[in-house]
Image (cartoon, rainbow, N blue to C red; front, side, top):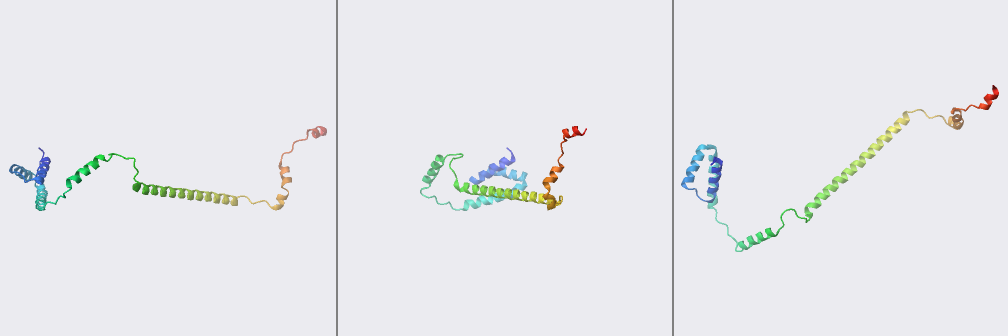
Length: 163
């Protein structure tokens, strides 16, 4: 038997009853081979002695009936996951999820507005850096100037007469 198994078996036996002479001899041999376990064993022995000096707790008259009722209740209870909702645990989780979603939505909206304002500022800066606007006098004759800049088609009849 391994030393740890022997030690565990002797410890459990000492909880229930006083060790026999053979078990005490095995314990002495174990403690001789493992001197570092002696302090733990002495503490365990002192605890066992203190527990044996405690008076027994009075047992209520209906103890057996209460134990049987608890067993019946445990057997009647469905084991595993149940479809019943636990509202006390569900409500805080839903509230937290709603708060996180609302915060994310507001952050996204703020980011979108910020991005649009930056684009507008860039467009305004581009326009102001651009060419100067023509004077109002030039805009009065805009139609005539536009017609002059368009290519004119050659008058073939006139060209034929001139030759």
